[in-house]
Length: 221
Length: 170
Image 1 (cartoon, helix red, strand yellow):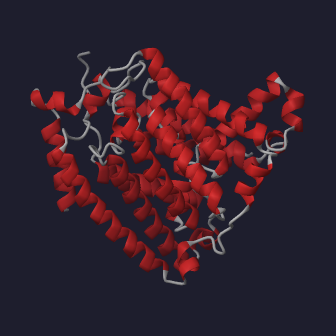
Image 2: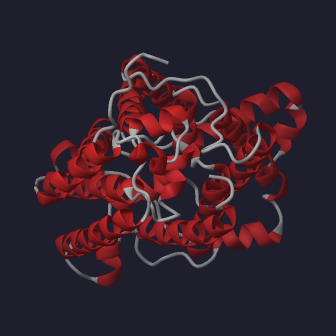
Image 3: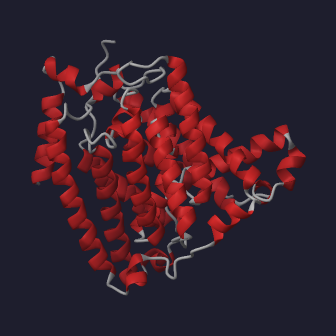
């Protein structure tokens, strides 16, 4: 690997980790609050990022700028993808992280992030141990999707898929806002740093109001 | 602690910047961001130290032991992710060395056991899906990939379900 390639890996990784920490995604409390439906930051950040990147990629692909028509998109084997999503979703709810955010958790000082990473290495050894079994082999190689992308699979314009994602995101943002207001609220920077429930900072009249109004402001713009 | 804790970025700001970082990664490298692939590489390297013959003979890790350029790329990207998270948390006064037990209803041992178990499931699952929330959920979906959408539905559905049994923890 040459220095240029190494540089892009370090630089893009650094930006990735920086943004995730600024979103509060080093905190297993805040991350898992998405699944308790009390803090919708994960949904908002992920869907906004996906839509921004998808629109950028589609615009670049019009003239194949930066060779964008050749950007990598993996093929799908249905059962591997579903079971992988199932195990990573369960691991997230139980352990408080996904692989990338456990690194962000460690970067913000959390020992449990490091232990999650250790668990992943053990999980990969376990996978390697049963990789040859007929069950794992059939999961990994059966039910291959006939196309790599949704627009190809459905025979529709990619822009139609993006519009559908935007509508889904808007629906999610409104549902999320309603549920955030009904619960004790989103985790602020102080909550995740000091290990408090958002309800407690509410009583102290701290960060919660500011964050809620900030997110309201964002939603109206 | 008296040092000032700066507020988090609003979700839409973080989302837009994250989307631009992802776009930049595609432009510079031709593929999206990843994380779990780095741990497959680490599992291989650590295994080669502990039990070299077993790893080389293993059908899955043996191939990786011969070296794969993309695997090396994602290891450095994860090192970058760690550095980026340290910079952000230190700069914003959020860096604390601790075991994060949420609001503190469980002990340190329980929390670490859950983190280890959750990591184990995620590590195994990431090899079934050939990626994780970053590589499949974020990057593949940004390419409008079928795998990304399928992954996200399974991920969120099971996360919601298992979370019902974890309420005492957080």
